Length: 248
Image 1 (cartoon, rainbow, N blue to C red):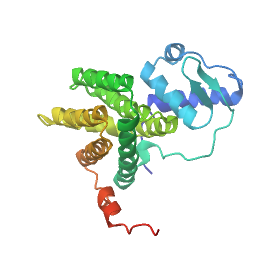
Image 2 (cartoon, helix red, strand yellow):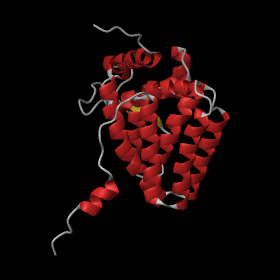
Image 3 (cartoon, helix red, strand yellow):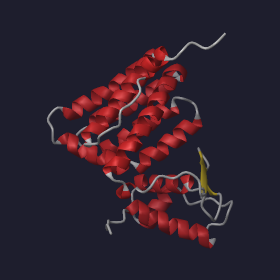
């Protein structure tokens, strides 16, 4: 059997989930603020954000902007969930990147069509913060995840944002590993940043095709940087051109 270290996120998730299941936080009540929980458990705000997102994805809480987290149920939902990241082998991780490529490619294309000036400004600000911390592995990994979620938010479809936020949280360690590996190769951090810039540039122009292509290329490159062997894929444009015309 494989053994692994339980992360801080998992430890706090288990403790907070146990408190909800025991009724310490009744259904309908609000959880303490993120700052209060961080102080209570002696962890960072970033860890608490991951914890509450895990609890939300499991059906224990719901969150709303300006309201915080409200306890939704004392029992978790049994819907779709990914296995915990440390339990994934290389093949499974490659399959998850395969899924991300389609989802985030579509999200980038939608963002190019639906983005507002505020969305573009938010993405540009995230890129600037990422550039400022390009050689600081942990903040860079956190900002990298926030950047991808920011693209999903620009679709103005909350389900894209929620699903991609969940996927990015599940793959957080893989992103952090990729970032650490990137720093070992001179110039690679700038190459990765240029890939992000290409996505935002296409979204800013409103070019859905270019945004999709840039997002797909970035994630394919990210998978390769992790040493993952991706399966053969269908090129969307070629598939559409090869499809027979609909009968009139």
